[in-house]
Length: 169
Image (cartoon, rainbow, N blue to C red):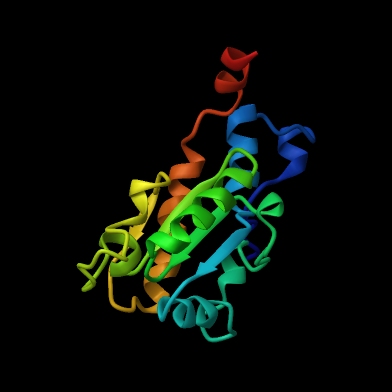
């Protein structure tokens, strides 16, 4: 006896037509192709580099293309201690990124200043740029950064695309 089970999408049943919302398609494209701009400022940058290695494989999430030009990236990963001397450069690079753009604060130092309560350290990168996802730890494990990317993908998937463009026009 032969069982005929269908797995996935059957184009014969649907008549070669896929019906969906434009927002859903555009957000699917966006969430699966986040191109990070790595801002490795301290020890967390080592963990950020490890995420690109084959053991953790950030390419599973469409983020393997690390861009070192802000005009080619849409996700800034701030990894490490942000000093006041670097704060203006971080903000300038963020402002040069095209819309839509997102930020992940990686590590205790990027999120809250960490153990450094001094006149030279910014007490959280969210004081100069908006942060979408915070990653805890000192330094955080690469798995924590991958979890943050998954959370950011969930956030990106829910954002309205066409409605905001129609109101802006």
